[in-house]
Length: 196
Picture (cartoon, rainbow, N blue to C red):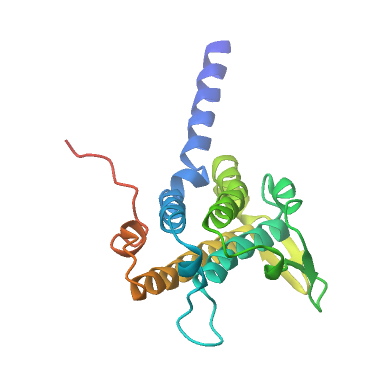
């Protein structure tokens, strides 16, 4: 009897691993790496560049990626987000009672600082990828008058990363900055398994 129980436990553990979000959303970590690699070598002048008046600069755009992540991860209660949220200098309360990171409280003129914020904002994402399964996507939370699923929120964060990462790639190209992983590869730097 203990043998069959052990086999059942092993099957269950295998099934949990199969449905971990890290397995399903494999590649997002590669996109994160391409954002870090594109940001790290930028000078303060390159970070201050903007394509037109009333548009975000390169540094402001990278900061916005980070603060958007932290805002939505905090709303959802992602693993480890409390530690990250305590590092945010200032939060803003919206009219509907929800909170968001005050972008202006996070510096955007230094590549080392911005890569630090990209890494910090990634920590709860890494946590949910490693800890949560598909079933966890269907948990919901209240946000103002809405009932929001974790799935909706994770897609919101991921699409936000991709959208603004594409803007970043274009803004770097307009400055003549290579950023090969983000521009030429579209941030898709995780290779599939070898076939042979």
